[in-house]
Length: 383
Image (tube, rainbow, N blue to C red; front, side, top):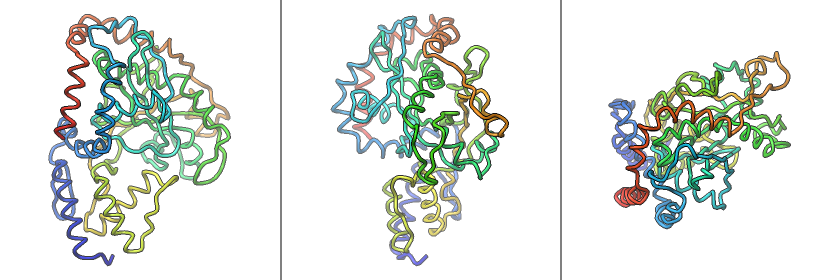
C-alpha cells in the first residue's frame, strides 16, 4: 500500500502506545499479552471500557437519582421474596435508560455496539421494585468455527441456522443481587420460554440482510462467552436434570476491543486514501470491522492485527431439544424445551440460594447503594 510515510509512522506509534497500555508486549510486528491472569485481563479491557464511557459521562452523572430510585440497600433485600420479571427494553423507554446506565457502568467488559437483530431485557424484581440484572442479545457472528464445528453447521447452510440464533453480550446481575448469585438467576431466565416467544413475534416475516430470504422465526439457541476464560456464572447451571449452558470450547482469541475507536477511524482514513471501500452501515457488522482492522494492520507490518490473545470460553443455551437432529437434517421441526420464569426462579432459590442464605445475608447488610453510586461517579471523574 502506498501510505503517506508520516501518517504511517504516526499510526504505528499510536497503536503501539495503546497496546502497551493494555498490557501487550510488541516484538517484530507481533503483540502478545505479558500476563493473562484474571486481574490483568480486567486491566487489558479497561482502556476500551474507558473509551465507551467517555461519551456517556453526562448521562451517567445526570441519572444518579434515577438509578438510586431503582436500587435497594442490601439490608432491604429479602431473598425469599425476590420475584423476577423479564421486561423488554426499547431505547427511549424508562427501561431503556436503566439498561443504558448499567450497561456502561457495571461490566468490566466494554460494551460493543450491537448489530442486526437485537433483544434486550431488564430483569426486574417486582417485589422490591429494583433492577436485578440485564440481558443483551444481538445477531451472532456468521462464521464462527468453534460453534459451527460443535453443532455440525456447514458453510452451505450456515446462514439458515445462524439466523435462528442470537449472541448474548450482556448477562448478569447488578448490586446487591450479584451478591446472592443473581447472575445465575439472570442466566437461567435467559433460557426461558419468554425469549423464544418474543423472538418469534418480533422476527416473523422478516428477511435476512445478506441473502434477502425469509427464514423460520425460531430461536433455536443462544451463544455467549465467558469474559476471562471459563465462567462461574454458567458452571453447573441446571434446571432439574437438564443442563442449561453447555461449554463447547474456546474462541481463537480474535476481536477488535484492543483497537480503540479513535485508532480504528484513523485506520479507515488511511485505507480509504488507498482506495479501499470502508463503507459501514446496516449489514456490515463485527466481521467487516475485523476485516478492515486486519487489512490496515497488515499494511502497517503487524502480523496478528485482530488476534488479541484473549481466549474466551464459549457456552451454548439450547431452546430446541432436538437441535442436533434439526441441523443434521433428521428432524423437520423443533421440539421445544418448556421453561417458565416462575419455575426457573423457584429452582434457583432452592438450588443456589436458600441453602446458602445465612452466609449471604452478612454480605448483603454491608451494601449501601449511596456508597456504591458515590464510588462509581468518583471512578468516572478520575478516569
